[in-house]
Image (cartoon, rainbow, N blue to C red; front, side, top):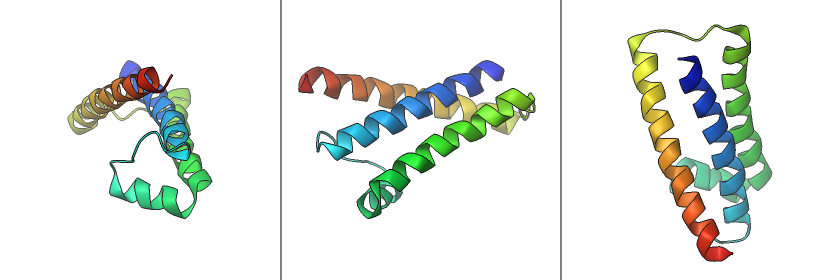
Length: 98
């Protein structure tokens, strides 16, 4: 579980920063309607929330209090796989914009 949370922390942070850059320079569109609305309202609040979510995961890692339930494991696997996919999408648009 530690590795899943660490991967999720890193991938979420990468997604937040790259999404912010891509949206700021009109290179991409945000697929999540809630985050899109948040970015439209305040781009920096969008970034702060994304980074805060990563720090919340970091707190679990530092305190070594990672919930070890089946549900948390399944959700962590799904989230890590999803963020891995999104990171690949970011790499594609970076490749084409550079």
